[in-house]
Length: 112
Image 1 (spheres, rainbow, N blue to C red):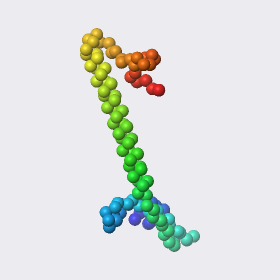
Image 2: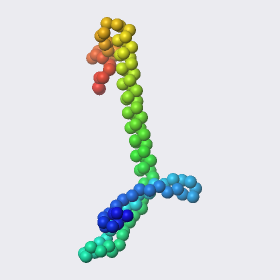
Image 3: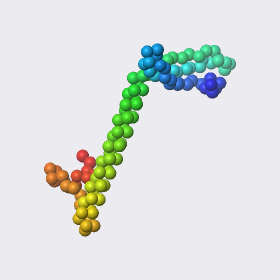
Image 4: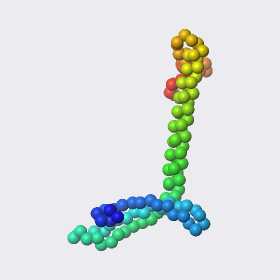
């Protein structure tokens, strides 16, 4: 391993499957203890179960992707609505939909 040859600390994450089929994620961290002469004295390491952290990170990424997909579909929907309205009017003007519950103007593109 390159980090071992260079005598620098490193971390790794790996997956294990328990005999009952449960999948766990483990983070391993290795620290090199070096003498004053630059010789490796020992390796000190820890392993920690990071299964819940990994699942939370994966769920966060999944929700972020869903949010992005929903925003994209919303933009396409608005563009399709505007295109349809423009085709129907035939005057070349783009009529923005108005939210009559809020007198501040077009509902499209407004940020609250």
